[in-house]
Each structure stands twice: as structure tokens, then as C-alpha cells.
Length: 519
Image (cartoon, rainbow, N blue to C red):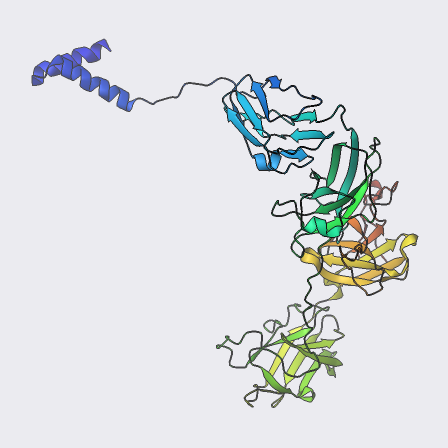
């Protein structure tokens, strides 16, 4: 630095600058070019705030407080109070919670607190320090307006009725037995509890008296069931809290069906609405949904109908001029087919032969639109897939679940159904399944209508029970997965894992010579 000052002094004399001005310029240049490094901080504060005192004291009897003060050792913030604050029982007016530095003030605005009642104010993780956001976790303030504390509890779990799996983000509510089922749609409950991520809930500090109990989805957080928009569940009987914690109430959430029933399309009529009238580039007025490019590629699914999408509304269809055939050892064989017209177009159903070249012929005059114009004829070639392009499922079902009143439902992603039939045998085999992930359930079809039915609150009808197989099945082409389906909610049963090959050898092979994995 001394050499730089001497140089600066020399330069100042050379160019006749004052020495003070030169030093100022050099200092500005030095600080402008230097890297500014923030001071290193200490270890991150992960210590929760400390509650020093509460006024009135926690767990006080014979009080009806209007204001409660919490004093901490550091400054406090209030975070997500609407999601964390839980009151039991509910108050007519929700208390206000405000932070004043190291003091938190709770004002109880309800002037009509119930007599001889235990009140719980649960803050969850709403109280945090204002520096690092460390919560003062699960703080509960308890007081009683009478000379004793209620200490009874209710425990339970919520399931999705349609899937049989656990359901979360559900509000469970208690009403006085004098209320009927319409109360859940019109007024707030007396007590509430929210389900955790496992679908479990607990009520604490309850009195020994009977209640009606409901579980609602409560999307808009208004504590009221919005019929037709939210899911609901109810118990058929009154419940009384107890000291025991081993008894579990189980709810099956369902969404009630809409009041209006959509009419089914008339499949017997020839007239059909076109799929896309705005497709002006399609001069044919229709499009065959098959890959007609490379006949060496096996692309058409053996499980699908052949679809002809319409871009004009049909007036007539001559089924005698629609021909479907396939090539078998050099001979053209006409396929037995069934045509169906619906709102999407025309569907051709047949028993597809694997790995065959098919020909669809639409002969002149095969169809006319509503203007009387003929749709142009066409000839289309495509090839079906092989059986080896698919997987198989062999499902062994517990003997307690045979009969017409039990349905086996197998489906892919997005509830794409591949099998829905009564269980009439101990083993169900399903072939021609595209590779992918599959799930399945058993449906207790009480009314024998061949589908799952939700419940009805006002008619006091429970949804039909569903027993899920919780493990997703991954199916590969050319493989057969053998499954032991024991419903997961049978107590004491432990589902076996995949059978491991002995001595590191390949998996056992089925009679067809394809790999056979037992899951």
C-alpha cells in the first residue's frame, strides 16, 4: 500500500492533482473492484420457542375466559391459523389470535360458552418464532366451564368407498342426537376432528353422551356438507364416547349421484352425430381408426372394435356393403362382424385373429349423409397383433368371495376397465392384456346390478363395500402373472411376496413356454 501511495503521489505531482483528491480516487477504485463477501453467520437456529407463562393457567376449572395470554422467550408469528387452529367444541364465533412481540393474545369472542363443558383450543403448528419459523408444536390450551374435565375419546379411520383405500383431508363431525340427517347440510357440528394422512382421526375431551357422527370432504372449509359436490359417510347408529382406545369407527366415503340422469344414446338408430363437423380437410367424411401404413407392423389391438369416425351426420347405412376379411394361408376369409352406430361413429366388432392381415372394404353406396350425398368408398389394410404381444393374469380368489354377489374389477390407469364380472370360480384367467400396470378390487354387489353403487344419506343407504388388492401389478408382454388375491383388510393375513427363483435360476416356465412370474 505504501508503494501505491508513493506512486499516486508521484502521479499527482506529474499531473498537478492534489494529493487528497488522488487518495480519494484510489480508495473508490479499491472498494469498487474488491469482492464483497457477506459476514459468515452462525449455526441455523432450530430451537423451538419456549413458553414462559399462560394467563389464565392451562387446565383451569370453573372459568369462562375472555382473553388468554401466552408469553414466550422470543418474538412469535402466527402461521396458517385457518389450517392449524382446531376448536372442541366449536364456538359460535372463532377466537381471534394476534401476536404482539413475545406475547400472543387469544380473545374468545363467543359470549355463550356452554356450561360444564371442556374446551380444547389446539394450535397445531401455528405458533412459530419470527426468525427461522421454528414452531412451538401441537400446543393445546384446555379449560372447563365446570368443576371437572371431560376425558372420553373416539377413534376411527376413513376409507374411500369406491376404492377401499384410505382417504385423507376429511372432516369428521359430531351432532347432538336430537338432530336429523339434514343438520349436516344446514348447520355446523358440535365437535370436529380432522383426518391425518393415514385417514385416521381422534376426538378427545368428550362428554359421556350419545352423538350422531358424519364424515364429510368439506372442500370449502365451511363445516357443512354440500350435497352433490362433496363426499360423505355416516354411521347407521348413535355413538357414545368411551375411555377405550382400541375400538375403531370405520367410514366409507362416497359421493352421492346427481339427481338428473343422463339419457343413453339410441344405438338402434342409424342417425349418429359426427365426432367433428369442423374437420373440413377430410373429403371422405369419415376416418378409419387403423394403422394402414406398414403391413409388416402389428398395430391393431385384438381387444378393440374397429372404429370409423364420422365427420358428417349419417342418414342411412347399408351394412351389406361393409366387408371385413382376413388373409389365412393365401385364402381370403370373410370375418363375422357386427356393426353398431353411436354418437362417435361406427364400431365394427369381430373375433380378431392374431397376426393376420385384414382388409376393410367400403363399397360404393355404403353410406349417405343427411344431404343425400354418398360417402366415398374405400379399401383399407391393417395387421393385428400377436397373442405374444400381450400378458396374462391368473387370479386365485379367497373361497369366501365366490358368487354372483361379488364382482372382480380389474383396471388400468385412469380406471380404464378391462374386466368386471361375477366371481364364479376360485381361479380367474384374463388374457390379451396390454403390457402396463394394473389394479384390482372385489365389489360386494348387494343389489346384483353388475356395478358398484354409492350410498344415499337421506335414504340411509350405505355404499356397496369394496375390497382392494393394494399392490399394483406390472404386466409384461408374453408373461403370465399369477396372483393370490386375499383382500387386504382381512385381519391376520399377510400377503406373500413374489416367488424367488431357486438357486438363481430363471423363473419357472408355463406350459406355453412363456415366462411365468408369481406375484
